[in-house]
Image (tube, rainbow, N blue to C red; front, top):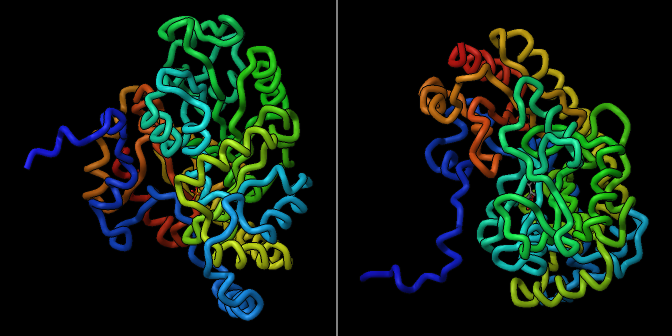
Length: 410
Ligand SMILES: Cc1ncc(COP(=O)(O)O)c(C=O)c1O
């Protein structure tokens, strides 16, 4: 049967995740993988979950297994509101922060609308932006653009690969250059804390610059922050949401501070914006998983999350430090990398002329996996970069993997 005629126009814009394709090709246990963004399974609080699951069933009975409110169960919204100092009305629970990104794109962007982001940026966000047929524009080097330092710091050895548009107000919104003047900039998507993929953190000045620009040009900011609580050194920087609560949607996630299998996240934002997200989510999933939410509420509200987080931070800090010292020890001259203060990733820049996409099969045959950095650039540039995850492998496997990778590069 011929199926082609059945697909919607959107399907042509869907983008397969190269990361997931890598996972299909290899058995992760059989190689040294720096490719995924997997938390260390040792951080999953299995005993707490066993205990709290029984408590939840005891306390809520069938209610814990029933459909529930689209905004999320009140218990979880209240715990999150208290933790982050916002009103309960400003909290919407999501079925993970990937859904948060997708629902924001669906609610705010028409096909052809412009979404600003950094280069590089999170691949899963690019997948959402493309699937709704938006135009993706990156903030790069240039005097009139925010985040210029941010982009440059991520790539000390490289000029930014994309020619920045001279950003200008066209009827309040707009970008010069390839973008039609009628195209509206709806939001800027950033991961300000320990970015995926670069591991970099935006300074307060960069955040303020972005907020000033958003206010001047009248666009929203989607602040995706799944790693914010995983800080191993340095001082926390205020969230963009705290600087501009009237135009920021702050996406949080339980994936890296609890367990990704729960598929739970949240959005903090203005009530009027959350209301449309609430309506949109009715057609997506009716409600986030109820049993998971009651468990997460108890885990966060009782202090068990903070106790577990302390252990996770100590573990990941040691892993980050180990990875940095291994890179120092084994990488050939000319290779540079970022020095993240938190999160799960760092970003390598190889000398000009290297192609990490082409190198990949050789690395895989040698038994080591990474993600080519160009996948995180909307224009596919920066083929001499790669993302490495430092949370997944234990110290001895990490050392064996970095040694192999250095040999492949050499
Ligand atoms: C920046 C960023 N946003 C969102 C996600 C998705 O997280 P979740 O498991 O909450 O959907 C990830 C996952 O790696 C991420 O790195």
